[in-house]
Length: 74
Image 1 (cartoon, rainbow, N blue to C red):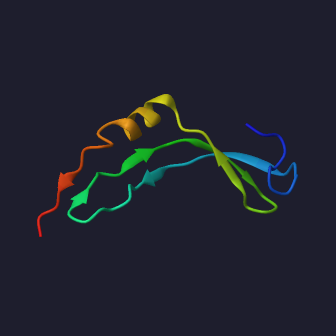
Image 2: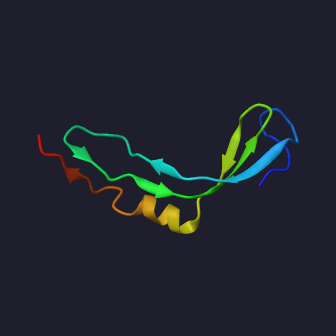
């Protein structure tokens, strides 16, 4: 990952563990379960810009079932 911030050029970066919950756009009458991912992130401690890369297994989870939505009971 970067050694300087892409936004402000600072070298005051910190690499941290994270967990994110990725939600898909909701469509009328359909939903998709969110995907939980645990990427390492790099945060600029001067401007707050953050950078991350998902693992191949997390990317695979995002691809799975993408066109398939579950019905929502109303």
